[in-house]
Image (cartoon, rainbow, N blue to C red; front, side, top):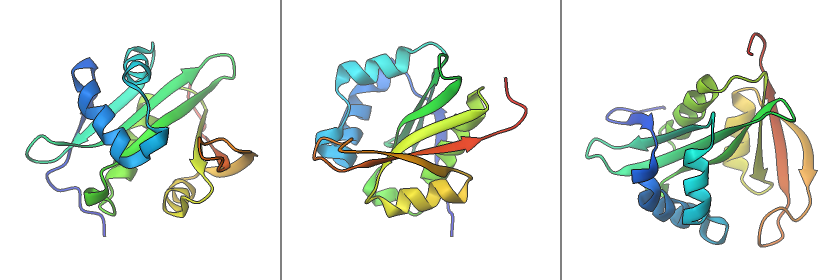
Amino acid sequence: MIDTTGIAIRPAGMLDVHALRRLEQLVFRDDAYSYLNLSTLIMWPGAANFKATDSGGTLIGFVAGQPNYSSHADWIITICVHPDYRGRGIGHLLLATAENAMTHDVIRLTVRVSNTRAIKLYETVGYVRVYTEPRYYSDGEDGIVMEKRRAGRL
């Protein structure tokens, strides 16, 4: 059951970078983005960056999407939900919000081959597996590149 009661989705900005870094470290550990990387994501032209907060204003989720004009695709660069808030539809809500803010017909993302929960979410909303990036993650695990094609976008 999806329950996003009390959850707010808002644009993420530079004032959120420290909280975003803490969330990334909790969720991704060694693969967490640095302060510099997160700042770059936030400031990227045409980016779709959104945060999820609980009713008390605590950051509990984040998604960053960027256009890649050379490949004519948008990329979900990172998406994460605090472990205590998983299974409530927050990841789905963040993903949908970012997708709606993006303009290309194609959206891509990379996910760990072992992250079956995320893969299931992505497949449920229309992503398909395109190819595998060998040893993509810092610990040597492969990444699956997934893609969603949409009609009627710029």
